[in-house]
Image (cartoon, rainbow, N blue to C red; front, side, top):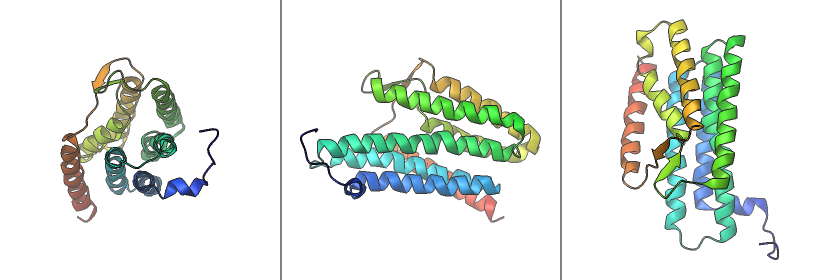
Length: 210
């Protein structure tokens, strides 16, 4: 690509898969806003949709036959940058906010973001073990699991639940960096994700307005 004329940066923003990625980033930014404000149900809803956009950008990219090599490479880099915001910074901010910004929650926030950065950097070099298998737990699983755990928030005191999600996110960070083979969910799994997102959006939406 060194001999090719370099397109402008906004040229890539018009690429449909990248538009989908940026919509996911928008969802995450809104989620970070809600997390900072302490509206955790709304924050969870928006990050669930960020995961859905993250899955769909790859689906769209694979269906497009006329994408250039440069568009594919750029899309992969953009997706990685957005992943660290969605699945690293977002859960770290949510943890800090839920812990009322107590100093003891700061190491946990660092671990979450550092683990995300290390995992994504490793993945960008080595990729999958094979076409169906990741090394370690994929980052998007973290927020999907976190969203499920939040369904049970009302059964705990605020302090107890803050400790629970702290421990959970540390465990997930360890799994992200582990060498345990985990399946890559693709194909018809997108329909499972759609149902999951819609069901949890409905439940958390009901909680918000009741």
